[in-house]
Each structure stands twice: as structure tokens, then as C-alpha cells.
Image 1 (cartoon, helix red, strand yellow):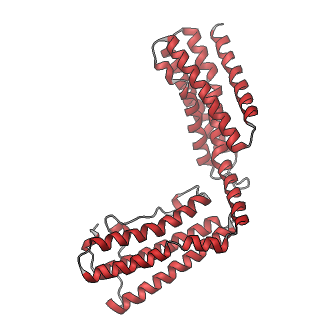
Image 2: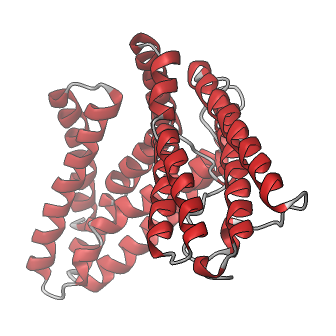
Length: 318
């Protein structure tokens, strides 16, 4: 990699050309990813990709006028400190609002980079070129807002936002909630049965860890194998399985960790407090994302947790 201040004027212009090309392709990728679920937003990003291509052609014309036909390949990753873009294909879940914010950030980042680079350059011709590029990018910075205003009436935007929210619930919230409920509730019985049967915090900790990790693996595979998402729109099965498995393990480990405390009564008190907090979090998620009335959500989750908790105590004292 080279420092930006080591680039020649031709290399800086070549870098601007490759950057505009890359951004145009990213916007085209955004459009393709949104084509089915959010067609109006896809139109916005197709238009932005077309604008980036126009900018690239203008920069190429300027390069040919000043330096000739050969344009060296200078990319962002070849220059220290330049902004980078994460490839869209590496993102398995790409929310609509995330894409919109990313587009605005891309334009602002590039404009800011050119401004800072111009301020650090002592060569007059390079400073002028960088200043011109900064002005161009500052104009681009508002392209996302303008194109969205032209193509996304408020009712269409609200409709797409609601569809995006439903996809997020299907692909992330539901598997995470299923995992948290299973991990928090189902592991209560073995953990508290072990602690009441043995009176030893360490034994309860081992049982809780085994139950939590085992349940996480089981729930992860069950979620991944339940459907491939092609018809339900629930997204990639292995990502859902990973989310569900991690949430299950987390839900069980929460009330297991207090049993690292050697004192039996202290460990019990902390574990019960953690259980109450876990059930409260699950109730909040059900209210926030699943449209369950808060009182009903709390009663359902609390009643289930109480039954399993009582089962663990009865078995442990049996």
C-alpha cells in the first residue's frame, strides 16, 4: 500500500475513477437485493448507480484529456487511509434502512476524504484537483435524499419499511426469541434440581452449562433444518440456526453463571434475580416485535417459567 500523498495527479484521478465505478456497482447490488421486497427503493439505487456511471465517464474524459488513454488501476485497497466498502454479497441480511443509511454514508465519506486530502497536499495542481473532486462529491452527497424524495412517496416508504420490519422479525427476531425462551425456561428445571439435590453451587453450574450448550446445539440444528426459507421468506437456514442456537445457549447460561459463587444462598438469590430479568426481557421482545399485549406477554412467559422452576425444585427435593 502507498500513502495518499505519494500519488501523482494521474494516480489520484485514476483512484477517483475506480472509486466511482465501485460505488456504482455497489448501488446496483443494492438494487438487485431490494428488487423483490422493496421495488421502489430498488429503483432509487438503480438511478444512483446510473449517476455514478455518469460521474465515472466524466472523470475518464478528464483523465484522457490530461494524461492520455492508459488509466492505471489504482484502487481504494491500494491506498492507506482510503474509505473502503464491504461487499454486498458478504451480507446475508441487508435491511432496507441499513441500505439507505449506507448510501448516504458512502457519499459523505468520499466527499470528506477528498476535502481532508486536499488540505494535506502542498502541490498546487493536486490541491486543485482534489478540491474539484470534493465539490463533485459534496453534490453527490445529497443524491440519495433527492432520489428518494422523487421515487419514494411517504406511503410507499412506510409500506416498504413495514415489509422490511416483517422480514427482520421472520429472519432474526423469531429464531432469537425461540432460542431465548427455550434456553431461559427449559434449563431452569435441571439447574435448580441439581442445586437443591446436591446443595453445591459448582454441581449446579456444571449441569447448567451442559444443559445450555446442549440445548443450543439442539435448537440450532432444529431451526436450521425446519425449512430452507425458499417459500417462507425466513432467510438462510444456517444463519437462523446460528441465531437460535446462540440465543438458546445465552438464555441458559444467564442463570447458570451465578452458581460460580460458592455460597449457596447468595448464588440462589442472584440466580433467581437473573431468571426474573430473563423472563422480563423475553416479555419485552414479545411485546415489541410480536405485538403481544405487555400484560399478556408477561403472564404467559412468567407462568411457563414458574412451572418449570417449580418442577426443578420438586425434583431436586424429591
